[in-house]
Length: 194
Image (cartoon, rainbow, N blue to C red; front, side, top):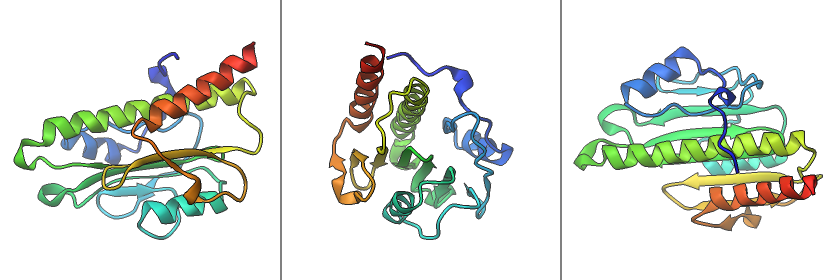
């Protein structure tokens, strides 16, 4: 498995980068070449115009299952400032969706460890986006399959390959969801080369 090149990330709107820098957080990664057209959705959130209504990961993931096109994203902080509770980064492409909710607060000296956990989630999601793109380019992506990964600090990590008609109940709880998904994609790419 090779690390995603730094050039894989697309540029974020300046306001997003400024907010994440102000919080001393790493910036999330969106795949290059996809226009997510992020627009402000309140003072601390940005979303694609096609992002669904609702406020829960389950609602957003269900929308993606029913409507995988067009690519869309949602990035933001919930409860910004002293009340900050979470970083949310949700990326949905026709074949892959990653929904991340990571706790974020500076209270009780939690900032450094939570910052590292956010950085880890962003790094693994960037790797997953990169490897998925490479698998598709190599025509190794399974036909009629989509990959959904939910990384929710307030619930659990879960993921699955989903065929048309499968729902959120098919997701497998897996504390190593990113690694499991990356290993599956790596195996697909290796099998396509063999």
